[in-house]
Image (cartoon, rainbow, N blue to C red; front, side, top):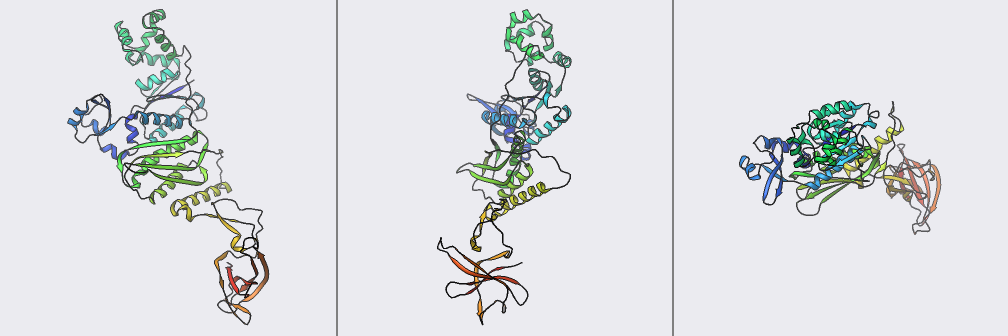
Amino acid sequence: MLWLGLHFFSLPLEIFTRADLQGTEKTPLAVVTHQGRQSTILLTNGAAQQTGIEAGMPLNSAYALCHELRVLPRQPEQEGLALERLAAWAYQYTSHVVLLPPQDLLLEIGASLRLFNGLAFLIHQMKSGLADLGYRYHWAIAPTPAAAQLFARVRHNTLCRTEEKLSAQLQKTELHHLPFADKTLRALRGVGLRYIGELFNLPRDGITRRFGKECLHYLDRLIGRLPDPRASYQPPSHYHGHLLLPFPVSHTEALGFALHRLLLELTGFLQANYSGIQQAELTLYHHQGTPTRLLVGLVRPSRDQRHLMHLFKEHLQRLILSDEVLEISLQAQQLIPLDENNQQLFAGAETQQENTAQLLEKLRARLGEENVYGLCLLAEHRPEHAWSICEPYIPCNNTVTLHANRPLWLLKEPQALMCHTGLPHYQGVLKLVHGPERIESGWWDGEDVRRDYYIAQTLTGCRLWIYQNQKGNRTWYLHGVFA
């Protein structure tokens, strides 16, 4: 087995800065923890470090160094949710992901190397993905999970695939990095030990007698002498991402960066589940009032991040904010399985269908869903009742017989025609070239008709679809125009 350890050392700060990278780089930021009346700096960004502010410093001292310091209270719950979303995102690389709060993940990648064309390519893809998500981290690879976690924390970016290299790295790792109690670490240093590798030269009985079985068992798991089973994290059946904004946002354009990172999380989660979505909801939380909800629907299931981003941007451009936005969340409740298709050399019918679906989605996002719709045929002889509005991209009912002698364009309401010497007129006398065709229907719903339809031709050669009403005064009407 081969384990990849990931330590997200800046997670308490990044749950804020991921939403607005450019603005937060210039502003001194610090995450603080509170213990009683004492507030202590936990983590700072680069701008705050340049003013001399460091982790562990009292908040009052930090303010003395920088009056413009922006203080962010630590959010343990949001950190935990972010780590869980990272674990769900990492499932696209392996099915064995171990969640180790508050800041660590373990991935068993040995079984995934062939799928990703080797270790180097897998690591490259993961690094690129985590950088796009906006996380900083240290990584390490080792043959045991305990060693991968330890090295990710203390020997950054370490690669040791064999037991020999693992032993060599332990010889160079200082003793105080072990997850032992302070009393145990002092006792080990008291006997002259400085590095972890030196512990394996001591008698095992002596370690058990002086420091307890747990210490010995941890050392055995560290080098693979004892099994170290780890429970896999089970991702949820839906996606719910959340981002805190470091600054209030009053324009929808400023939400694009935060939304981009949530969509990257979502599409990675969908990739891991071989699924797509047909609907997603973006929620904007304000200082006061009801949150603003934006529902985006798709014609066909998708997990294309660029396409989803384009749709959300179109919707956001039409949105007027009632108040400043402090937080945003993205939800996708229903996952739809997607088949993995082979890449085609030439564009076929499937590619054309995807392009048509994406065009319809873009039009609905820009013009409004109520202004872009499909048409379907109904089993009805009356022309004005023979069709209905439906959702775009729904296949037409093949059981309905299509008539050849029907115009492409029907008038919204039939237009009455003048009549001279028994013949209808429209820009002159009309020549009847085909007909009559009797349509008599609708007696059951109170809108019964009895009409004789003709194809007529104007003096300029335009072909019209007209009818003579057989009820009442036998008036002529224009109902449609042929192309």
